[in-house]
Image 1 (cartoon, rainbow, N blue to C red):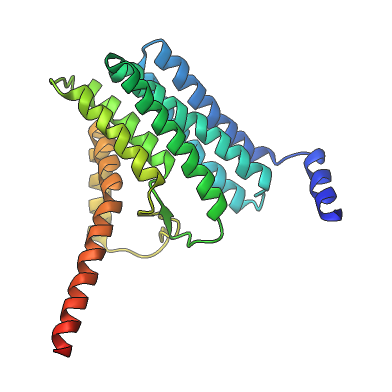
Image 2: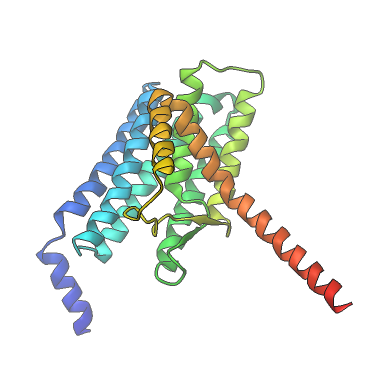
Length: 254
């Protein structure tokens, strides 16, 4: 009882400004993306979602770096993510490409949104239980980034073909499935940014950065695709490696 009262007192006294400010900016970008989609400004909507991804990645890092993490911040971040990475991308994709499908189109958008919300709920539940080295299921910011990058890529290069809406519809279903799946994705939370690297590796990194700046729409789309398929490919590779190991072991026994 005293513990609950103490937590309530801390909440009434106030919340941490900096991390929650970045979370609010995340939600703002998501809301602006919705408005832009309604007004048929799909490029602006996509860019807003990508900016929201940046703010989302910063709020948690700032909270940990300044030791200002809180239960309120975690819950607030999840609610902002539902707006920016659940509802905003779903509405953008639906209005951009799926209105011709009628009920099937908006149901696909709803499925994406609800699977994103379930993904966030599961993440909060399992936080601290599973290893932070990987995510269980495709992270919802990555799914939103995939939606945003494909809009920018198709718009930039003016791509249009017969079965394009069908492929976008299938993509939404795939993203929804990947978010609620148990497939592991690298979290990159333990990336060593301050270790020594070879000069040649550094040069490759610079060239990669130049390519991204020069062909930013294609680069974002490529990165989003690679990350999306990395989970299933790692699962298949792990299964094949395990099967090969079992076969070798059986042959040795025989």
